[in-house]
Image 1: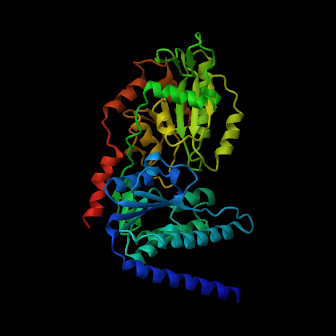
Image 2: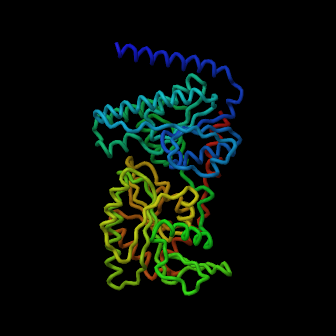
Image 3: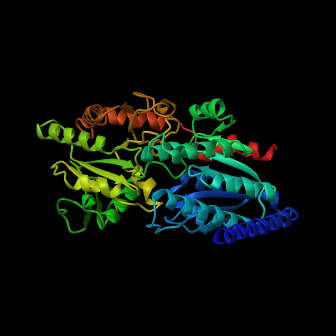
Amino acid sequence: MAASCVALLVLALLLLVLLLGLWKRGRQTGRARHMVVVVLGDVGRSPRMQYHALSLAQSGFSVTLLGFYNSKPRDELLQNDRIQIVKLTDLRGLGAGPRILQYGVKVVFQAVYLLWKMMRMDPAAYIFLQNPPGLPAIAVCWFVGCICGSKLVIDWHNYGYSIMGLVHGPRHPIVLLAKWYEKFFGRLSHLNLCVTNAMREDLAENWCVRAVTLYDKPASFFKETPLDLQHELFMKLSHMYSPFQSCSDPSHPDTERSAFTERDCQSGVVRRLHGRPALLVSSTSWTEDEDFSILLRALEKFEQQALTGDSLPSLVCVITGKGPLREHYRHLISQKHLQHIRFCTPWLEAEDYPLLLGSADLGVCLHMSSSGLDLPMKVVDMFGCHLPVCAVNFKCLHELVRHGENGLVFKDAEELAAQLQMLFSKFPDPAGKLSQFRKKLQESGQQRWDESWQHTVLPLLTHR
């Protein structure tokens, strides 16, 4: 009896949605200039989809952006009159029953909820969807497109099933089902974008999906931070995180000092401190595809070299981000008692993250890629700030990091430790390897997101 009632309710909902869709199909006014961008995740932690929304708005389209609102997006997005953000509610607190049942309930809830939210919006010419996460969003967006006359654009950042495989194992029934779902519904899209040529080839050969490569490019606000803004950022962070605080008082009462800089309050002149620590930065979503124990072991080896009297600086290691393994690694870090290395694990405001990268001396990337086919956006942002990078190697990393040219690639903690020792030797030596890498990045003249998007994506939307 209960099952029959549920079935009737589902049928009634589908009938209502179909009727609403038929009515929407008749409302053609404005459809060609309206775009929908869907992120079944945190909008604030989805920079590429924020960039899509901004680029669409700058091209004259009105944009509706759907996603969870756990972190504040960039101010440019919030202040743009052409962009409307529709906040989605995540289903939390399912603690009862088997895990597979909890997952199933969550997927059904998200499917019905997303369908209802999308059917209440004005019809759109295109629906841009981030994948992953694509379950159940790909099917829902395709269905909405069918009944409202919208075309589906999937932006493939990775494969969702490969990320699930890190947790459950590649042969787990849920992972196999997710892979089938992703392949089946992924073929129903009208347009496909992806982040690497390797992924484009894999989609074509194994998924029968034709995609266009749209490399991640740094937005215009990722750039070197002027020294006065560096000081302001360091002073701001020093009120919350002790590694940014000065280890000694300034010699003059009119001097304001952080761990890295000091400012003469009368003249306003800012200078870097002599003998300052080096600032090493890494950002992460604290998931299984990033093994931060590699960095911790490398830093322990660096500490041993520093204690032997090598001309190495002290380090402040800042690891930004949120994610499920954050507390696990914070516990490991708390057990380290290093004399020359201090750790900080903040979550930064959207506007402060580019300033930090533009103020740092070295970036480290531990992204391993669950599929071996995506590239770490954090390295793209670091290069935009002309920040030299050490990155752990995987299958298609060469499409972004060229060892010895624009960065260094390592395979384990021993190689990373050796690279840290080489880069920071006699820091801050203007003739050192670290400065040479920065100079190469400054001279590279790399393309920015807006230019790349206008050249690659806009013609796909306007020539159809």
